[in-house]
Length: 191
Image 1 (cartoon, rainbow, N blue to C red):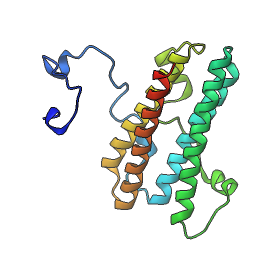
Image 2: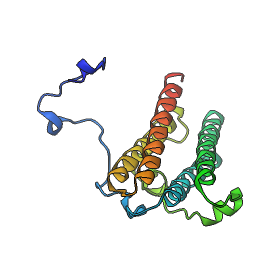
Image 3: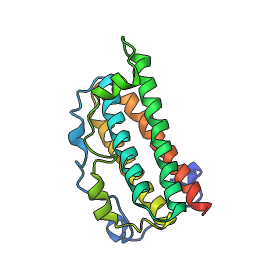
């Protein structure tokens, strides 16, 4: 079916998913779902999404300060810049649909940081993946893991959200996470 839809690399895993022994998504199925009630209006969704981006931005900044390798420091700086750009698109989207335009400072005061993208805390990600923070490959792999967890979270939240506009926003953010993963994959290929 997938090959018929144009996918080039399709594998049939004998024994199905139960026979899969490689990496899989981590955590319980409801991981991060407590960040969303399902009843959020579009503005509420954008505030939560912004807070998750802010958490990841602060994580990358902290890791940049702790890294000893200059290439890795530069990589963490690039990753934090990506999060700033994503935050700006969320902030802009908020003002586009809000009745009242807020300054970035006013908007940030309304946002509460609860966790990183994907629903885990900084410590939980580091404990789970135990990356070598002096290896560019492992740093990108960690970033890809976080973005994959975020994509998974947004896709699960999409099925929970009742408001159609809120669901559309969640799906747009999920598509941005796919783009982030693609960019990180290209960055990894260029190492």
